Length: 217
View (tube, rainbow, N blue to C red):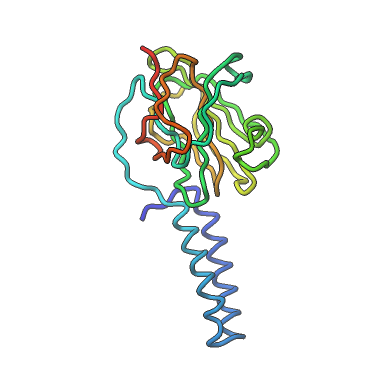
């Protein structure tokens, strides 16, 4: 199983904790140490599972908006996007549990126009205000169809580290990685009002594969 590059520090710490606590349990508890070691082994295995990088065949997209992350669609509504678009947009929000793949992917192909990191709070990720008050990043892309699409990584109550690798002027390719969020959170995508929304609330998405909307040509 391939592991994401963001896993290195976390796995080092998890390995040290597993060895120390497991060693102490075996030394002091003998046969009863299994009551400690087995749950530790399960948690340790979940750390590796969290940082997995699945093999996915990413297609070329022009007008399609693909799911930027694995997760569950929790919001589709018209909102004011005042950081970049300065106007109304359709917001599609996808929530990630700690068990989802946490690679963040471009939802649309085009050119990166804007990027910004915002420090902030750590409200639970499904809280509506988390989109504007939590620690977050914002990226805007001009699509191949000439539309401006904004998407936002949002840290949650558990997630305390979000990273993004893109820069202004980069070529964005729908479905390809641009960042990572550790341990559960949310991605918001802000789309033009005339966008055809294909997904619905409650849908389970696979990042880079599932088409959630289509831009008008």
